[in-house]
Image 1 (cartoon, rainbow, N blue to C red):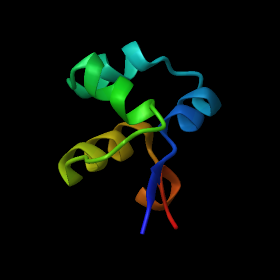
Image 2: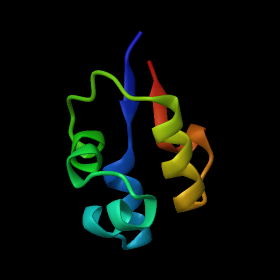
Image 3: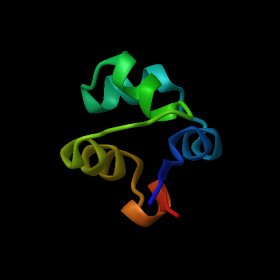
Length: 66
């Protein structure tokens, strides 16, 4: 089972930079950068929840499970 985080695409759609999302969530810029990469190997559910709440999206819009 592979999980793909679609944060880069969501940020582009909403016109929000990674730096701005880091500021809005209080997460480190490196954490946001990692979530936007193609090599996300692990992530905390609390982090995904915070990103979803900040962007106003459902978890199904943020992650894709193969």
